[in-house]
Length: 297
Image (cartoon, rainbow, N blue to C red):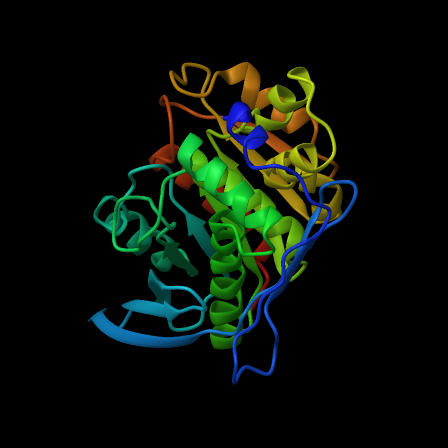
């Protein structure tokens, strides 16, 4: 991936863009430390009711963003105590989360599945790959929006939708690749109550870029997409990292190293399984949430 950065060249100009008719001009900047800041374009939404009973509702909410439509699914009880905005791992689709959404709603927590751009489901885009790195760096140097930054804004906008609807604390949670996007979103959006990463770690792009002798803008861009860059921005909000010892895709040691770079308050939780969110992770998250919100009316 790093070799692709070299062909794109270097500039020192952070990207900005705008959407006519919006009161907020969407823009991003990356400082000299590689930390991303965003002013996300406001979105409009279309909503379709999928299911409703006395306990909870499930809706499909499409966010009409500055560049494309982003699909989300929200399951929520009538009066949730808190909410989760979830970024899925590569290839994860909503069909694998139906029972999970019901379980969180039954425990009094709203759960919003936010379909990541390029994840192969309902939201268009490219998956994180050498092709996307090259394209996003070209956009970065040309003052355009990288898809990576737009995906971060999708999570930020999802937080606003849920927060406006329920007026409860909203956490950002992600599994595998989704945990990486979620960490950046938690860092750039202080309204998130905390960050939950599952089977995740840094991409390793920054280390590779430095090892190959690149400096300045390639390093600044690589830093901006690494999840651990944002731990200094997340503190003092909660960081929970879940990782399985037998993870075959992201080694346990990588997950532990990722956790070690986080700031307090933080928890590292081993879980039964291999890679990605599962019922054991759900059980532990709900248990921790109940400890926090046991007295919330």
